[in-house]
Amino acid sequence: MQAKVYVTPKAGVLDPAGKATERGLHALGFEEVHDVRLGRYITMEVDGDPVEVTARLDDMCRQLLANGVIEDYRFELGESGSL
Amino acid sequence: MKCGVVSFPGSLDDADTVYALNHVLGVEGVPLWHKQRNLGEVDWILLPGGFSYGDYLRAGALARFAPVMDSVVEFAANGGLVMGLCNGFQILCEAGLLPGALVRNQSLLFVCDEVSIRVERSDTPFTNLCETGERLRLPIKHHDGCFVADESTLRRLEDNGQVLVRYVDADGETTAAANPNGSLNNIAGIVNEAGNVFGMMPHAEHACEDLLGGADGAKFFRSIETWLTKGGRA
Image 1: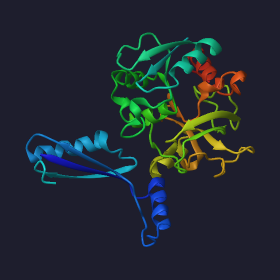
Image 2 (image 1 turned 90 degrees about the horizontal axis):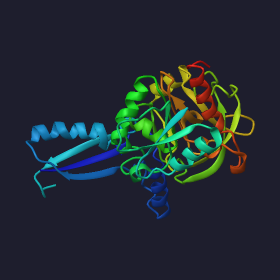
Image 3 (image 1 turned 60 degrees about the vertical axis):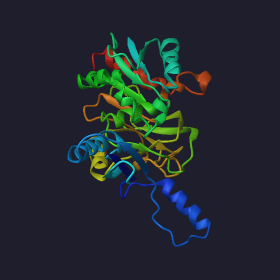
Image 4 (image 1 turned 120 degrees about the horizontal axis):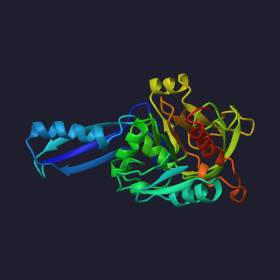
């Protein structure tokens, strides 16, 4: 099955890249934009049954894909090609 | 005295560190390859700067999976002295040997400069030849040097006296202007709770002889040597 993992800066952690992007959007006239946060988006194919894969994905996020000091994560699971 | 200097794929400052140790400091620098598990007979370990594994995912995140890191973690757990400079500091944080994390500089710019740092404690293995409050000049060159930690971790670091060096101005004050990367509380370097693992963004190894613009960095290396020679006393 396919997994999509979203890693984002924790609330309260300064995100200078998000701030710079926000300034860029403002410069282009999109003044309604605020609180831009930049994260990371990871896709992968994972074999196994969904319950087990969910637990394993959680481990992957905690051990490597996200740094719990500065980042939050969430993920979605679906059939290959369905997400 | 032997110092093991770890080379990861993408390490940049390993050879400079070995040069400084061998030719300036009179310490034998022993290159350690990332794939080796046996550290051999080394008295302390240095993780050098660079962009290990391309800094993919996060700076320092992948280096901690190198076989040599299992041995470094064990060496530290047994009380061995480990110093990480720049990327080495990032690796120590990612490996969980030091608290907190190093994120993109607040300016978003790669900073290559000379900075002033203030030594907060002189009763440690890494700073015993410095005076408390002494100001040192060291070079920096990094993109991800902004030290962050959650509120309780930061408070614990401060309360325990784990902050060893801070960015300061010419008067020794921790001003915002003197902070090159946005680090919380102007933190430039910290030790673990046990006091045997030290990480710092500024490059001590690039400031060991006057020919290179200053020798303040040598104080850290000589402090370690002094500490170990005396059998671990300040």
